[in-house]
Length: 270
Image (cartoon, rainbow, N blue to C red; front, top):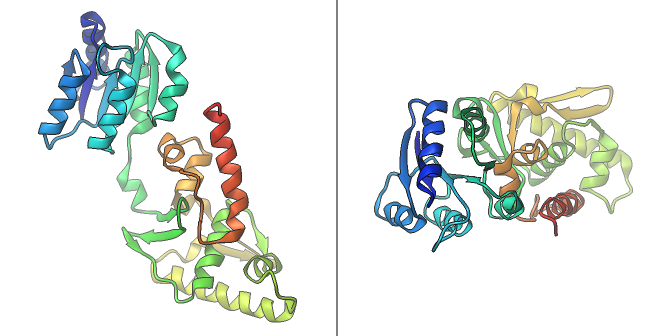
């Protein structure tokens, strides 16, 4: 793991470097006493840091401005602010920082931040990848899942939107064909779509993702890696990835979209 530490105060710079090395002994830690030098290094190198630990109040380029520029160069780099001023926490959230520590940081706090933002690709490979932000998309092993009918995909999207809660055939029919009154005909079509969805999931070995019982149908959340679910759980990567668009191709998704937007605005103090 490569870490940059940026702080214009020499003592604070070395102190933060020391606690990172204590928390993660195998980490490579490079220090900078000003943000501009660190940015120049980033622009000239192809090897980018996994995490940047930065002060906020610095002469020239501030830590907040630094974070924005770092994200432009290397979007996957995580930003953790280590500062003596608590009033910048809201600003840090708005620019998609992944952590915020008050000086002096401890090895335990550093390790907690690193653990929280570290990805575990081996776990994600075992799960169906669901994208809800923007358009609704489904991926398996990095490739889009092919649905034979667009309404099968929409049915699956609604089950995902239900967040693991069960729904009836009638509810699904009302969502997919809200302007129709022939309940008997709609029920038959929904059952065909459910059968089609089951076949699609069987083709990728995920047949146990969906379950039915006594006229109810739902999905098992523990087999899914979903940006929407991660946002609800407080994952900062997912929170920062939301840009006000949720399952954009489906009109019924506007209710959840509005709820997520309102909650994000509240957290940002808007």
